[in-house]
Structure formats: C-alpha cells, structure tokens
Length: 232
Image (cartoon, rainbow, N blue to C red):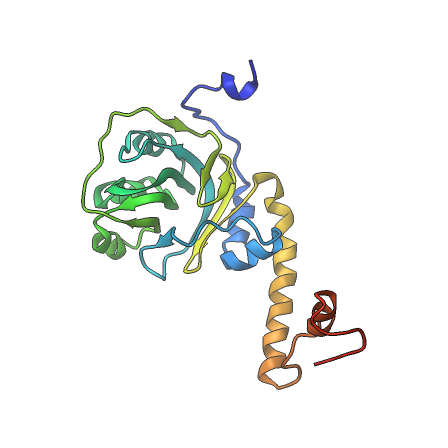
C-alpha cells in the first residue's frame, strides 16, 4: 500500500511555509509570483475575489468536498491555524453556496487569512463589509448540506492547479497564485528582481527612453515573423 493510500481522510498536522516567507511574499502581486514561478500557479480566472481590494497571503489547508456539501470546510476550520488559507475543491459547482457570512465571521475570529473556493458562496454584501478575503467561482443563495464525507489536507486540483497542504497561496485583485512549499523561499529574490526590472521598464516608457521592449525583434525573428537582419 502506498503512503498516499495510507493517509486518513482527515490529516490534522501538516508542514507549512515559514511565516517569514509568507510575510515577504505578501509584499508582491500575485502576477509577479506567478511569473517568477514559471508563469504557472495562477488559478483559473473564474475564481475571483468578492471585492477588488481583497488580498492575502498564507499557507494552504486543502479541502475536497462533494458538490453542495460543506461538512469538510467546517472540519478545516476546526484544525486551521492563524494565517492559514482554506483552499476548497468544490468541483466548480454553483448550484448552492458552500460558505456565507456566519462561516466568514468564524474564519476571521480564528485568524484564518482567506478562503478560496472553486464553487459558490453567498451573503456577498455582508462578506464585503467584513473585509474578509473570500475568493469564489460564483454566488448562489441556496445553502449547503453538511453530511457528505470528503478529505482534508490531501492534494487537490482547483482552477487547473494542483495544491498541496502547506503550499504558499497569495491572492489579490488579479486572482490567486499557488507556489509549492519547497519552492516558495527561492521565489522571493526572483520576485525582487522582477519588480525592479518592471519598475525600470515603466520608468523608461514614461520617459520615452524605450517604448518598445528590447527583446521584440529577436522574438519575432525566432518566430519566423521577420527575417534575419530585419527590424521593425
């Protein structure tokens, strides 16, 4: 029997990204982190914040539920630690909400950093007023059931990305980026360099120093759009 098969449905203890790494990652846009991670890790755009000003950074508590049932989300809230992000594979189902105002209030009281759901939520106006970072695939006023078993802190697939418990999760107005726990610390110096390069590029554009990127002609030649020796 493999190690994965031997895991219980509910895994209580996980290894998390270092808190200092999370704090530093919180300083960067989700887009910068996705770029330095190889232009990957960004969840599908259907999973979006309820308000553009919502942002967060934390470590993933992963949850797999059956469509329309939130029993395992309650279990995740019971084992989560302050700074965790509850990431829910809700199968993209929008027929009923998996969370609302009451659970959001509970998450805030527990110190949970955010919730990311590939599914629906409700009480959106109240959650916006709370300011709790809630990212979801849609809204629905129907409530969920609470009796179907699922899994907690197993690898999940959400928005086209595989998420492991303890991974780094960062969200802002653009969406959510996930970076593997083992790679998170190594991405920070790359993010610093990326921000510096983009800041210089924007300054050059504003100062009319370089309105076209320096790599454009070479990329067009490589793609066969222009011939060797040609320029735009």
